[in-house]
Image (cartoon, rainbow, N blue to C red; front, side):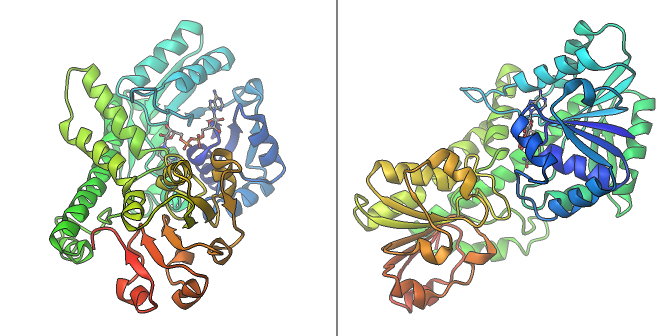
Length: 430
Ligand SMILES: NC(=O)c1ccc[n+]([C@@H]2O[C@H](COP(=O)([O-])OP(=O)(O)OC[C@H]3O[C@@H](n4cnc5c(N)ncnc54)[C@H](O)[C@@H]3O)[C@@H](O)[C@H]2O)c1
């Protein structure tokens, strides 16, 4: 198949690389020239375990190319995957301008019959909007629009794409359905079903999944804060909950709130879409509120412990979760910006997200080269991201560096082990 991927971000680049790995002929289009130039020079702008190897192999086999030239990208595809951003507008509604712009560019450039697949997370009705936008500009070419929401998670995106739990297709006609089933067939060999439905259901299913996962996180965070008040330990509570097969063990970890480019905007997006359709999603409104408050919890704990002005704080982790360089809506970034405003002095480290963080934090903080260097002169250590490298630090060494208190935003450490070194320990809900 000739496949064109529109948008080479976390979803687009992984999608393109994985389809190329299976022998398809993939063209990745991005309107960011720097990204394309870098990719053509072998420099990948996102960090995803396993991605570099797959891309290198696909490039060697000539199965993938990168371009910012729309004419070239839309010259010959059988299928176009739209993987452009769908950020939130002020007020929380979904900004569909990237999707509409991509639709116009497709309309202006396609030369032959094509299937257009929405992979971006989009509100119910967007497939129809894409169809209308293209039809208005191009009356000649035959095309179909399909909804195929993506469920990969950053940090395990390649694995998630190659071995999905399911493939969701919102497709209205038989011929298109059969073509896509064939394309996805190799990904179903490990048992994943292809679940077929109408486009509107597929669009809603994606939001439903993210909203459910976000709900579990906010539920556990609210319960963690309550545990602290009553002298219970949320980690023990979780251990009981997760052994109930009806509950399971995923997304039950209390922490500093969810971040990233998906959960926050998707929860708000579905709330807004519901409002536009005269529905109210009360539970999700609370999920969002609880999360926003949770992102401030470590700052509040530090302020309860000491005076923040001129406090030297070491921050471990800037990415919103481990195994990614993504800092969008990261609780760590929010914390750092607030702490600086209040006069704190920050020395930070993240194994992958320093460059992305620097785009936001600029020169307002010190960027350490290692987690050990980030400790220098700090009296407080705050841990935001659950990178494996942070999980078993040398507490004796941390103490030697002068750290008097650890604020563990991920409940990574045994409080007793930390306290035995004469360091104060503050976790979440314990
Ligand atoms: N990141 C995730 O984990 C994830 C998972 C599932 C779904 N999604 C959804 O997938 C979509 C993409 O997310 P992402 O994180 O990959 O975004 P991203 O910001 O990482 O990448 C999007 C890319 O699209 C490019 N782009 C924008 N308009 C374009 C156009 N007209 N032509 C060519 N390129 C264009 C941008 O330059 C950018 O490089 C969003 O709707 C998101 O909600 C994301």
